Figure: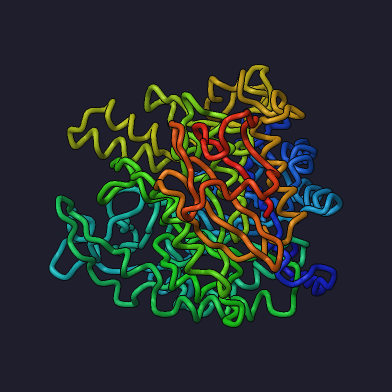
Length: 577
């Protein structure tokens, strides 16, 4: 990309708030499709599969990072924001994808990682070179604790724990100071307090928009404002580290930074989508971020529902999902954001295990639970996100050894806990349940070797069930997971009530039944889903058979002569009232 800024004119043909009726599809390029047989997915692989995305009916393709990177965290460690990593192709390949996606009516949203860079980024290389380098203050550098010997355990500037195990501080012997990294040691945090950092980031974003990109998904964007003093966090029982999250998340200047970004990057442009990933965000905070009058973000990713099965202190500590907890959490966010804010609707992404394995029943009711979960998600108020393979009902991978695992978070967790004396098989079981590699196994296109993903050796093993769970086996098959997703996407496009209507939870007599009503004027939809592996008798608001006056417009099961109020395991129905 040229260093001179490419300024695209504001788009005038896209209606304001277009993303309310849109469906976003996340592509994790490394695992989507490999076009050249090297075992790694690439941009031309995405081009090869545009027919699949067009057939599904999605409006936006969100690309996980394809920038130049050492790949310490699979591209979320960026060493050049304005170059394509050779593993994924070239800038010409990207421009071709952008053009051909636009020709098909699909927008392209880039993943933006600006809380941190790679330690191989030129900015950090300069920052690290000397104490008086002009870019020293572009990152968080600190001396050892007073009275402590630099480089020794316990000398770190504060007690914060990294998301990826261990301390958030890495000692740099050359300069005698430590640098902050909330994630891997190869991902040093940028210092957003420095205005030069912010404006360099904004200029980079403008150049991507000038190239034709349609917006950004902003990785952990709520971590860019830290408490300036970087004090110790509250001590965590049983750990040598403290909880720094309250001190580096939702910091004092976060709203200021986001409003400045909006003004500097997005003002005067239309047809764009901005979504911020925000671990720990509350409904009240999300209302502020997504209120259009505040000019910050279109929507945020919240984490409440994907933390319901996390134990104390770690996602790798399992807490069984309480009956009705998922529906209750989703309802809480629907009610909280209501008319003023906007929800991002998702169950899966590159950091989460497969939804059907986590929230459904992938052993006995695989198809039924995959389609029931899709139904309740896509028919809420908000913008739905489909993670690659979710539309096929892809499941968690049966990992049998740590050698099969590729994710830095999982590997660090395994090494830390087995060194501490935990049983390796127990640690591996936890990784197999919640680890990020579950989402990163290759998309299963057909029943050929490697699921049609590559003609070479895949960078991570393909799920053994690819022979039966794959796209080719579901195309055009009535009742398949893929065709059910197509129906849900089409319903959102055809019925404004799905995007714009109000949401009202309805008491169905059981925590395991999720029933809600969507209404826009005289158009009313009733959605009822049995989110369990047992039959349920459903009575809504005390009315024995309220659906007898309604038209059944979508179901994930073939209706029989059974009484209407009896729902089979994982049965989901959509009525038009």
